Length: 411
Image (cartoon, rainbow, N blue to C red; front, side, top):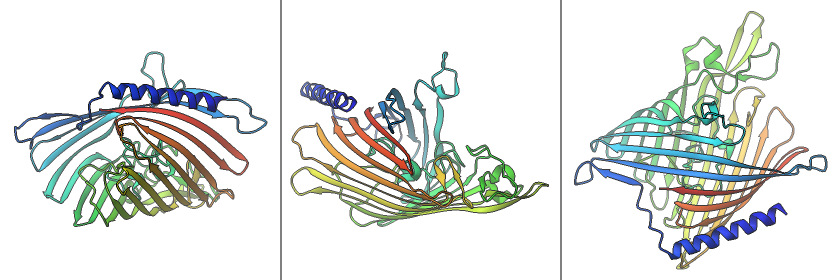
């Protein structure tokens, strides 16, 4: 019954959107841009977006017959950047994530209700193709999905395990440090040296004679090397080139580009993982290392105005011996998704997609598998879209089923 209600609601919103478009919705022109010089070389640009969801958790077994429906303000963000000269740029990005009935507070002063900085950095161009910068930044390593923009994902949300250090060493996938980025022809790179947060999500202390490490080297080990992380991502773009002006990787261009990108990346944290070796507080550090390879493909299909988008990645995760905490674990991850954008003479366009991830962990026997299937309804490209998605997650006998409907607008 819940599925039928969602489907009817989705069709109603599409029909309403058709009517809105018939009245003439203005085309998006790239946010609010204020020219500080007539030639446009000095400016301030402002972008804002919001994603609102209604999520239905379906019964997972005959023993659990509860169906839960909840609203979620998944993201509410404002991003501003200014080109001060042709050499300098400053960017500020702030907002809120996942405001729901559990995180709201009576006066809006609770931790879950607060705005915070996602990015604040300044950068300097050494050359038109090479830039250095510093601050709270998103020039990450590992994979394309660890640098994923939340404005233009093809699936409803990112593959969770691809944000491989979120909350462990960073602030919501952003590190504080130095970065360099650039390109040599079709080859692009990004490299970073950062401080590791010393108050990450894994607040556990190591247990003597335990066969499992904890992730807290910057908190526990008195060694300067534990305070730094190193990351990089390298990509060769065989067809058209993507911009690396900002760090946020596009999920789908809706067929406006033909791309075949092959990438590889890493994340290193010396002494990031810790084990306790004696009762006097003797800690033994271990190198945290994560490596991934990935492929991103998108192409328009002939003269039909349709498009195919596909992505695949394989990632090796070493967070320490037998590490398993929350969504993280030493082992491997394989993930992929594919979507087909149907041709249309109208602005409203449809894109069904499927995704699948399998996560193998050293510390447990059963893999965690996540299967997703969804449908994007683009009302005005990514700037106004609806997404309906079903997600099934399983690990051994533990299963969950979720249906989500998301509305997104960005200006």
